[in-house]
Length: 124
Image (cartoon, rainbow, N blue to C red; front, side, top):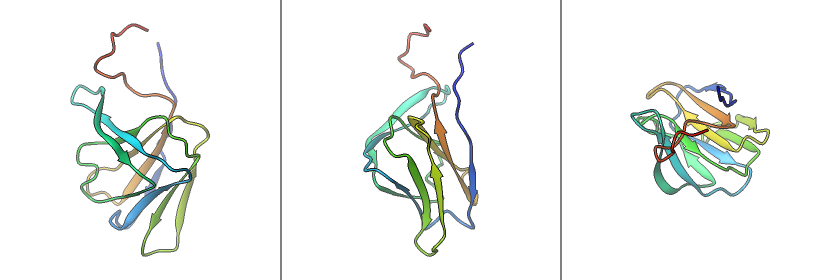
């Protein structure tokens, strides 16, 4: 049975409005998500940039997934606060961001793999 390893750290916020995610390296990445069938689906080209703002509706369609990231440090910052949450990503090539819609937290999830894309043939 194949498997992949990742983590699911959760960072509590009073609200995620006004927060943003900042990367240690310049990033321009395509946005992926999980389709209704649970498989990886591309949603948008060049969606992610250096500072990605968070909003209550951002996770309405589930997790935001990015492949082949270069950054090893990912920060969660808020424009109205001096506190910074810094996550060191130890070479995980992929990352997911997730929150239950309307919840006062965000998950920053380094991944070493995820579900197949719909165009895969199913062979290992």
